Length: 144
Image 1: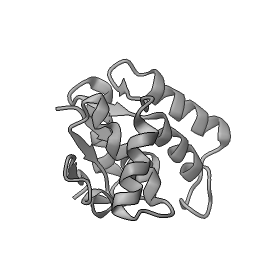
Image 2: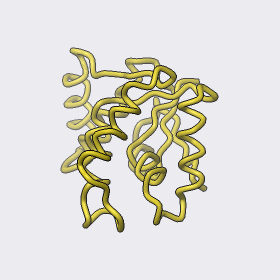
Image 3: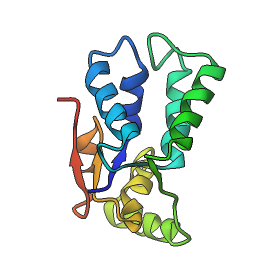
Image 4: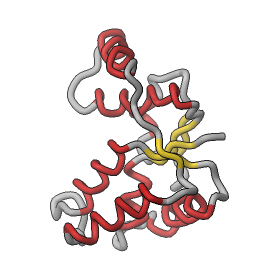
């Protein structure tokens, strides 16, 4: 089963102050070692970078160089598949945005949800409620 790793799981894995750091790190370790069929999208790494370098978002932000290295390590990991939006993604996202009356950051979750085009079957996220609207996607919180 192909599992998309959401930003929240990655943030917890790198955030030493997080009470979920051990569980999240275990998920990332399994992804990096190929124990689970994990994938990431570029958007997730951009969000990870934005969060882990921001003192308002994490107790101990990392330097830009550290964040770049973390993101590139994940992107270059051969065991983690990379999924990219297709040319049809915007059309599907905006169709769902209209149907579901999405606004604000909900559009970003929608972009991830439509990665089903890349045969993603499940998303691992702390924010399960953000994805419940998408009946075509299984959602699980591996941190609990």
